[in-house]
Amino acid sequence: MAIPDIPISSPSATGKLAQFFFESLPGYFKVNDTYVVGGEGFLERYLKVFQTEAEQYVTDLETMATLPFPAITQARFLDYIGAFFGSPPDTFGDTDMYSALLDNAVHINKNRGTVESIQNFFKVMGTTCTITTEHATYFLHDNAETHDDATVHHDGYCYPCVNIVIDVLDPTNIITELNVGTLTQNTRRIVQSILAYFLPINAVLKTFKYNGVTKSITLTSGNLVPTPAPGGPLPA
Figure (cartoon, rainbow, N blue to C red):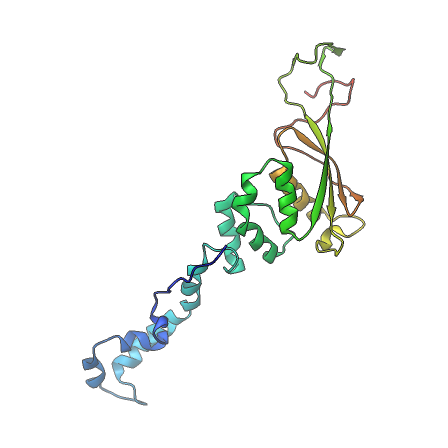
């Protein structure tokens, strides 16, 4: 996305803010200022106190013009901007990647809840991923008896339609947090938040892999209850 040139309207656009307060006054005040010390009169020295205080906020004021543009704004604004895009999940603490994610958030969120949205997320991370789906069949029970009619639901729960296997392909090990034998608790939390954000409704993560190696990650979508074992009782 092309970033337009944004004119910044502030005193420092025409000169140093430390001179703005006094220099913006009519010339009368400069000519008639009294008690001159070091070339500066009483009024000029007095206003400089306020000028010095205000100058520390110049950078903050000027960078506000970049606020709507994740690709160029300061990292400290990213969480704030993210709230306007549905608070996308963490990118393993990498602010450059999170900036890129927010820059593509509209496109990615349009497909949220699909396999494509997961692939687009990892594409922003600089990796690719393969996703395979397996149709899931579960028995329906009533008083521990299996019914022949699979269209009859007795409990009202929504069970998964598919199991999903995800393999993140990262040959250059960009996501170093996944390139370890045992994932840290924080890394597992991040992966779970990513998948919870993007997983399709009625999908369950069966296996999560990194470069073909299975990692210990389990997750069901937010609309699901724990999956019963075939032939076992329904969850309470």
